[in-house]
Amino acid sequence: MWGPEGLDEVEAELLGPAEDLKGKDVLEIGAGAAQCSRWLAAQGARPVALDLSHRQLQHALRIGGAFPLVCADAGALPFADGSFDLACSAYGALPFVADPVLVLKEVRRVLRPGGRFVFSVTHPIRWAFPDEPGPEGLTVSASYFDRTPYVEVDEGGQAVYVEHHRTLGDRVRDIAAAGFRLVDVAEPEWPVWNTSEWGGWSPLRGNLIPGTAIFVCARD
Image (tube, rainbow, N blue to C red; front, side):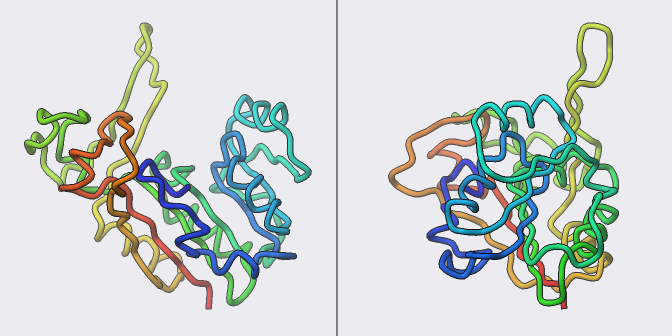
């Protein structure tokens, strides 16, 4: 799944047809509990799941999967140039780094020529609206152009969650600056079967504004 809307890679084929994944070396960036890597392995791919959080990778280890788990910074990937055919990231790493170009350059470095990187993030327009699934979340409350990061702190004032705001144009420029060619930008529509609410995602919101942006990038 590329996001809360429920867009399935089997349907979307943003990485390519599922039958073409067999035997491909695929890097999942910001893998969390490695849900995407387990799906990739089931298609016959050879995934590597990478995350900065050791705790998240412990969850991945507990759930299981016959593929490597790597604890590392997405801005300093511990792989040789041209190690992978594909890379993917579903809401991983990119929203949480102050220098996304550094990450994108690293991903491009470890991809082979002709490789593809597909990543999903919160759609930039959502930052202009309150994070509410109901009618109160339908009125603009902030500037779309405000790049101030969203920060949550603990009782001691330490940041425990930081998500960086990038406009759609910022994302496109970042991709180009890293040397990628932008192939597609997907903005999943809310499907009729999805009745779930999660944070600011809901059928009400989803039928009016996009919640997820997916960028398909190619390494020529």
